[in-house]
Image (tube, rainbow, N blue to C red; front, side, top):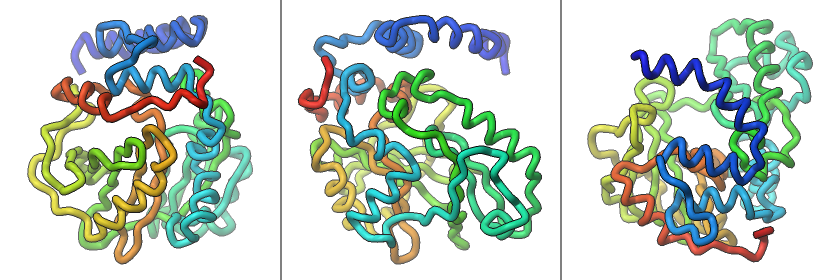
Length: 302
């Protein structure tokens, strides 16, 4: 890490405290300027990133909180598409101290422990591993204190009850499990973002709905491009159809799916990808994605 990166890391807590004192609109504007070095047009948003900012401030669709809640969304999607579409929830806990590693499911790896109200909280316990309950509980207690809605100004998360849940850890013996993220605009898949080997050799690629490689990546080193051409998932047509069924009632949604054996499984649903803070590379894709998004202002408070 160079001097500039060290300075940025040191300044981050102070920056967050300053942002906490700003009104929501100015918090969104300041965060956007920090990333894009320009101010967003919130009155007439044009780009994809500007429209994510608009959604943060004004979209109050009452369906969103349940769909971003990683526990509740499984129940909603299972009711609509059947239990086979979701990865089952093995247990739900209100506090970190409630986890008992001497009893199932925590005594029976493999599994994943997650927080339901934010991203990047996966704690994987693989087969044969002996977890450290004290260490895990300490980490989970920290996750539960994290106010994602306040930090990212993503309104839907402000109505999500913060909980911990456990689900099976899914492995594919012959390869890594890829994460397929379908960008759906008004019920039509426009692009498919693929995350490869998330926990070891992370890489990202973008394809169109016909599986043609697109010249899209993310700026910076945080999400490196995958070098090479990926084969389409075996059930691509079915995955597109399911993503479009989920997205038909929304101006934009990202539907994350897995192709596991002979089944399609839900990952999560996202309405604010990357909080709008992951610039495309090249940046013109911000315009291209934005052109696909016809904002639905019927559920807004603008």
